[in-house]
Every structure is written in structure tokens, then in C-alpha cells.
Image (cartoon, rainbow, N blue to C red; front, side):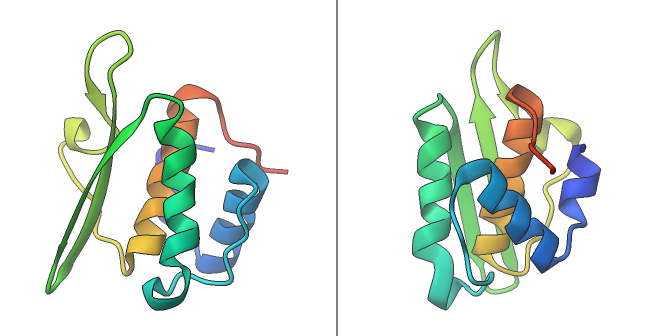
Length: 109
């Protein structure tokens, strides 16, 4: 699985991957209900050396991750674009899964 595949995942397969890879079960992607649980996914990766920037504006929700092993690198910005997410929960889930792709690999089955 690669970054592009993760970024286009619909809610159900995204939540399945999150549960398989982070042992965190989210009931959906609505920030009002699930942001606390999604935040825990980032905490798992922070313990592994990742840091995250979040930006929210009226019509914008963005998250990027940074890891500084073997020099600085970002998940999205270094590739010339930052994706827009419909919710911060979606952004956290997708960004953290891409972080796994870059470091450990994603368990898909």
C-alpha cells in the first residue's frame, strides 16, 4: 500500500486499517465524536519520533508529519502539496498511516 492509495480510502476501509495498525477503533471520522481517539494515534507515533503540525481554518483542514532520522523530512510538504481533509480525524488517520508506509509498512490483511 502506498501514500496515494491511503489518501483516497473511503471511511470504512480507512478505519479498518487504523484498527489493524494502531489497535485504535474509531466509530467514524466526525471530529465532534472521535477526535480524542484519533489524537491517540498521533501519540503512538510521537513516541516513535514523529512530530505533527495541524492547521484548521474555515475551509481548510491540514495535517503534516515530520521525522528527522537521516535528515529532515515531511510526509506531504516535501512532495509539493498538502492534502485537504474533510475532518481532522480523517487527516490524522491518513497522515499516520502514510507515516507507517514510510517507516514500518502498513498491515493490510
